[in-house]
Length: 136
Image (cartoon, rainbow, N blue to C red; front, side, top):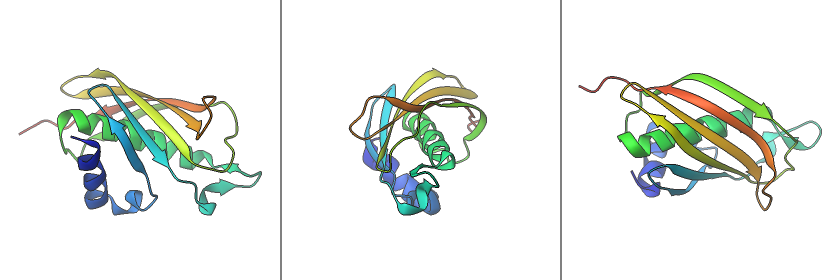
């Protein structure tokens, strides 16, 4: 699936997540880049992007990257997440860069790095495993 295909799929199948404004900037066979434009509702006390916002972006990043490889399988689900938060991102857009580590018939594992727009310093990273439903 192309970046445009993924964007359309997200809007059609998960309009609530799509309403966050996530933008699929690019995708290829192994990697994906998403951008999440900052909204005031995403800012927590202390003037930083909230942890749940970063978690959601990381999860959607790996999910869309997997779908880019296997096609529009809406029922692929998260089975495991390990996430590290390194520093407070300033209010502003977040960029997620994901990569596939393993893509099997039933499980897929991806890794995501999050940083603030205009900075290469990591604010968080996550390793996420997805269960892929049997085809048929």
